[in-house]
Image 1 (cartoon, chains in turn cyan, green):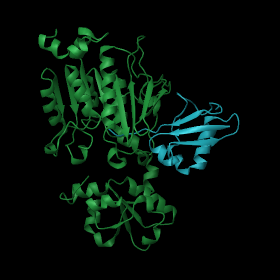
Image 2 (cartoon, one colour):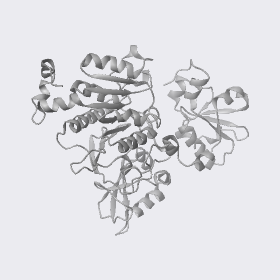
Image 3 (cartoon, one colour):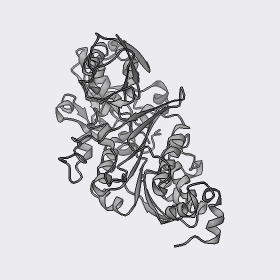
Image 4 (tube, helix red, strand yellow):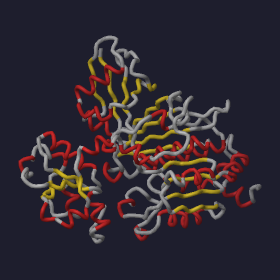
Length: 80
Length: 378
């Protein structure tokens, strides 16, 4: 299945894009999506502790993804 | 404290709003708001909240107006470069609204004064520019039971939320630590001075914060409590995420481990383990023994042009491709503006086998501050 990863802040730099498509096995969890991102973008390990959101909700790593879900990466930003 | 005839005229356009009325105006007049930072976010908050008729406003900012502020901080002008931000802001705001009482704090907020400062106000607006302060202000507001209007910006993006708002059932809404339980490594957190910021963005995000502050005080509409707004000015998209209170939140959860303020600089600096892997040098040491080192400047060429230490200029993005230009048989001091990019450059070069690198602590900013005051900074 395909899911969309939407990146904000510095995560956009790591992914080199605001959104990337991830191809995962059916029934994959958010934790597996996280690992897949780390494999594809090694620098993402620096944000490994980031809480991930799916569509409009923050979720735990055992959350099971569905086709076309959007995984949102929101690192803290400090500017004011 | 009832409203005077002049106040009834001044605030007429909002008093006649449905759900606002004289009662709403009275609530604003009775309210005391603390604004942390009089910069990109703080300034628009100050302007709108002063105009709206908040009775008492505290302004916390230790800094001075700089030329690099003026591209976005439209409260200030060119003649005011070098003057205290808090004082200058208050001087102008007092003219905007002579009825507002201002408290001026020309100081940095830290764990030693935050509780005392915040305790005197009903609501806090966070317009700070660094992560330690954001965690500090969040924790202090939770410990003191004050609502916190959160805003943060990065390049073209902004975040807004309302933290710790009192719910009808007496509970409190989620806070910063429910979204960001732990800080990422410092090099992943970019300030406006390192990452850049689109000039209009703080105006937009700051005005959104002021919007929420007024609603929370007057108890109007539905606030962003429990929601995080993400705004991207580049493609004009916005997205809302729902935030839930986490029972494991260390300051507001069921078994809190933080019951008083902690050392936020250390908390955000990450484990010492990581820091020890990179050797560093202080500006004073470099000045003393300059000829012993090869200096590598990893800033962009347009930054190099403003001021430099005479080193070889290879921007961070070109480091991997231009390794051959960097000596391996001599101590190399790597520097940038503040010390963040140089750290990243050293990490990259270490992977390529370099073992002779030192990070210049505080970068060119520290050099300007401690060695050469005449050097242009930006």
